[in-house]
Amino acid sequence: MSTGRMIRDIRPAPLAALLLAAALACVSARADDAPAPGALRDLCVDRPGKATSACTVDAGHVQLEADIFNGTFQSSNRTYIYANPTIKFGLSDDIDLEANFVPFVEVRTKDQATGATTTVTGVGDLFLRAKFDILGNGVGDFALVLEPYVKIPTARDTIGNGALEGGLLVPLALDVGNGWSLSATPELDILKNANDGGRHVALSNVIGIGRALGDGVSLTAEFWGLIDFDSAADTQQYSFDLAAAWQPSDEPDLQFDAGVNFSLNAATPDRQVYAGVSRRF
Image (cartoon, rainbow, N blue to C red; front, side, top):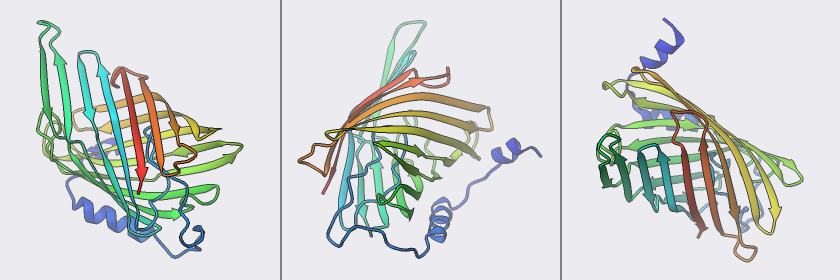
């Protein structure tokens, strides 16, 4: 049997238990490089861009990361996401728990033949995540975390696919000096087949380069790729993404950001434009 066929033939499993157990198994005792007691690490968020930060929220703190505006555009389709908050809680200095939920999604589809536009609105799916620090965690030149997640199908059929899904991300970050940084977020997802109740694997990665310009301003350029091994047909998507962020010097717990993503092939939405804010409490 070919590797591709084996990937497509994956069937449902207790995703949450398996993924969380795998992450916990990788967390071992190590030297603690955290700041002095009572001191917070630099603010570290999962936005802007598609990459995921290789750090957790400080113990006992709550962090809110949300879109102010998010629009995705592809030929006759328009998708608008409003708010899209991610709420994080630092369970310890090395583990945080996260929940992401879109309270309002608007999908507009234009019929090319008649010119009529159909609009569907509703809530999005609920994503539950946990981050486990393995190395670095905002201290030092290199960082690595494990982030398993489960998607709870709360969106209507025309917005989501109504399926329980999950996966594992392995965010990595490297500070190369002089304000430059490199990042990657390899990801494995177990998704529902489009044409039946089976499951298949999707693989993706984000490779990014960042530059701190001073005065709290930073720029990021990313290349994102996805291969979805659905039983119906393999799908590949690629994009080139640019983003900017600003952390006010007198507000170390606050960040504003904006970005735009550009399609690199026909299967990827033509462009995505967004702006957002993050706040640690």
